Amino acid sequence: MIVRIMGEGQWTLADAHFAELNKLDDDLLEEMESGDEAGFRRTLSALLDEVRRLGEPLPDDSLEPSELILPSPDASLEEVREMLSDDGLIPG
Image 1: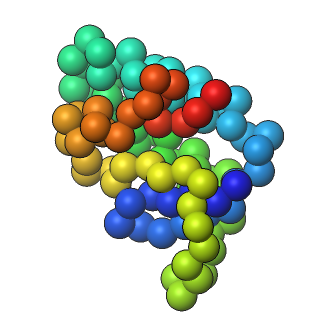
Image 2: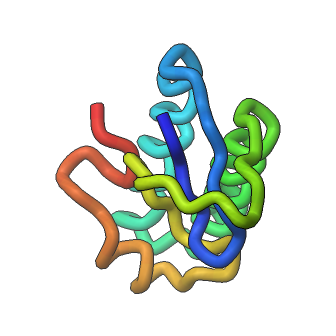
């Protein structure tokens, strides 16, 4: 799957890693619902770090359709809230 982090680029990520990412996504959703800004920042950073760690970056000149788009590291709680589906940022 190709994942885009807004403002950074794209990574190819194996589907097998999505169980790990979904746990962080669930935590992020819970922190957003409770208004825990510090927890939100920490978990968003951890989620993006995992995508970078587990994924293989695509070349900067490559522009592939992204199957999943994640917010930039400095996105506000409100900006991320607008990106959410019922499942959070990551479907499933």
